[in-house]
Length: 445
Image 1 (cartoon, rainbow, N blue to C red):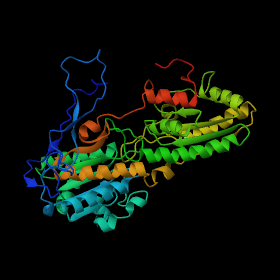
Image 2 (image 1 turned 90 degrees about the vertical axis):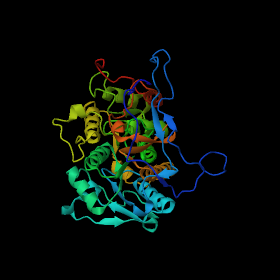
Image 3 (image 1 turned 60 degrees about the vertical axis):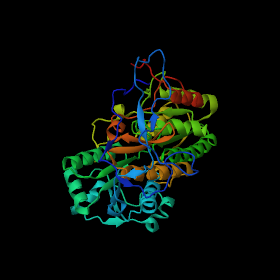
Image 4 (image 1 turned 180 degrees about the horizontal axis):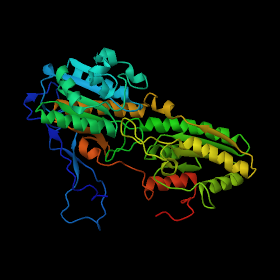
C-alpha cells in the first residue's frame, strides 16, 4: 500500500561533488536524436496505485532516483580500480552481470583496471590466498554462456575491517557486490567502515536471489530462468504421474521463506494440482489436511502433481534453529519428508500409488540465464557501472515499475518480500490448481 514504509529514507548517498565530464557522449536534453544523460531531478514513483479512502492528507509520494549515466562523474576513469565480487548461492545470470559491468567500465568510461575477487568476501582475506583476477572484455566475452559464477562464490567471510584493509591494499575505489540480502548487509557494513576511515570508495550492490524475495524491486535476476527450468521439470513430473496408476509427481523448488518460484511455476505450467509454500500453513493429517485432499484428487482424477517450496513446513520439521555462514536458517528436507509421508499414508489405506519425487534445485540455480534474465542482467550491470562512476555508494540497482533505479541498500534489506495469501498472485495460483483455499483442521490465526 502507499503508506507502507512511508517514513523510510530513500535518498542515495554520494561520495562528493561531481566535477569531471563523462567520457560518454550523450545529449543533455531531448531532440538531438541520441540518448540523453539522466539528471539528478529524475525520480521513479514506488507506488503506482493508492487507496483514496486511506490516503493520508499531505502524504508525500515515495520516490527513487532514476539510474543511468550522468553528464558529470565523480571518478577520473584513468584513476579507477574497480573490484567485482559474487557471494552466496548460485543463480542464473551472475556471469551476465559481471560481463556487463566490465564492458561498460572498459568501453564506455575507459577504465583499464578491473579486478575480480575470487570466492566471495573470503577472497579479500590473505589466509585463503585466492587469486585476484584481472578482468577485461576479452576475458569476460563468453562467460554469459556459462552457468554458475566465473569468479567463484562463498558464504560468509569474516571481519569487515579486514575486508576494507584488503581493499586499501588493492587501492580499490569502487566495489560491485553481486548477492542476496546477506551479501548486501555485508556490503553496507563495508561501506560504513569505508566511511569511518574517510575513504572515497563507492559500494554498489546488484541484487541476486533466485527466490525473488528482495523488497521494493520488481524482481531479482535469475528468477524467470528458475521458473522456466522448474516448469520443464513439472512437465516431466506430470507426464510420469499421468502415465501411471494413481501417479503422483512431487517437485521441490527453491524458496526458503518466499514461495514465488512455486506459485509462478504453477501458473506457467498449468499442470500443478497443489502448491505448498512457507507463507500458507497447512496440516498434513486430519479430514481437512493435505493428505486427505490429495486422496480426494487421486480418487477423482487418477493422478496429481505437487509443487513444494523448500521452506514449507519448517516450523514443524525443525527441532533446532541453526544457521549457515550467511545467516540463513538451515532447512530440513521437506521434499523427502512429504515423499515418505505420502507413501506411508496410501500404504496404510492400501491404495496403490506411483510416486516420483524430483528435486531440481541445483540444476536450476546453476543454469545459464534465459534471454529475459540475460537482458535484465546486462542492464543491471550497466546501471551499476554508471552509479559507481557518478559517486553513488551504499546503493542497490533494481527495477521498480519497469524502470531502473538507485535504491539505498539499507532500505532494500530492511524487510523481505513474501507471497501475500490475500494477494492476487496467490488467488490466481489457487485458480490454477483448484486446491482447497485452506488445508487446515482448525482456522488459521
